[in-house]
Amino acid sequence: MSETLSASPPLRFDERIVGVHEGVRPGRTHVIMGGVHGNEPAGLLAARRVLDVLGQGHLPVAGRIVVLAGNLGALAHDRRFLSTDLNRGWREPDLARLLAADPSHDGPEDRERRDLLEHLANLEASSDEPLLFLDLHTTSGPSAPFMAASDTLRNREVMLSLPIPVLLGLEEAIGGTLMGFLSDRGHVSMAIEAGQHDRAETVDRHESALWMWLAAARALSPGDIPDGARHVSRLAAASRDLPLLMEIVYRHAVAPDDEFVMDPGWESFQDVEAGRRLAVDRTGPIEAPAGGFLLMPLYQAQGDDGFFISRSVRRHQRRLQEVVRRLRLDLLLPLLPGLRGDAERPDHLVADASTADGRLAGLLRLFGYRSRWVEGERVIFARRRPNFRGVKRRRPDDGRR
Ligand SMILES: [Zn+2]
Image (cartoon, rainbow, N blue to C red; front, top):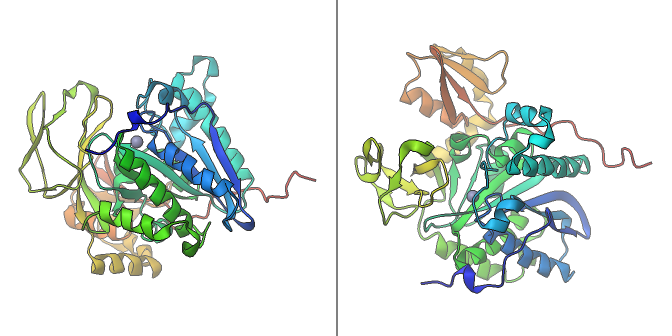
């Protein structure tokens, strides 16, 4: 058994800004977030270690590195959240509703969300380039580390530089996440799941991933990472022989009154065949609807994702996805029979229910269309805006004269 975090000194995170490091060379703003789920402090502990090393001032960092704490109230109570999940509710309509509401009626997470919005807006305003954003998470069950982000080529370029699996489609399957919100605002935005909540090795993995992410995001040259080889081998060993690119093919959503209980003993990235029993709820046993790698089985009371199933994206598929997007073949999609663009919403496609089969979904995934829902007789497919460079930001010298 590995050491657990309870053996460490008490975990206290009282301030939104955990630390800021100003580099010695010009560069982008790198925002690292931990503890958006309050029972997941491992990312913040790792970020503190990285800030300590940066603070010694020996490394030629480009740009600025900012570490933010997520759910301060929930971190103090070691709970995922106090009232509502702080990693949900980041869609524009939800935020508009929050900002229009009277703050005196705010629940605990509404207050956190408002304060985070303000900090993120300040970071945007002081940066004339898109931010590079990394959200640090851990899981209730054991897991190899992995990265997730919305499926854009800009995100892929950074994620595929780390020696851990990249999972596409998770962000789109969950929806309303902080990482998705930042993607929608044109930032390069991703998350790392490093392993089980309270394991000391999870902090080590986050630390290694942070150093490698800073290099992938060009805050540091790979050769400048202290102990770089050790971080690479630690992450490679933790990732075993898993495929480096995977995509979600199924999410089992859980409602509070489902009485969902995962069968004991499942781990992330275990291979399951279709039809294998995985869990039970008040309607009876739940079986895997498709074969693949099981992901994030739910072993805690709070949470609305029971489990996910993912599959490997093979090298030729990955190449094909990248080529068709660079060639902008997506411009031809609305010409396909039964498929049309949506005049109101960019990066949405509308299909007739009769044409929206698995083959069409597979074709659209090539172009990054990984969200799918039904509106009346129509099926809507959506993706993150692939070439969007961001909402209009102030130039850094504006307002400083
Ligand atoms: Zn989390």
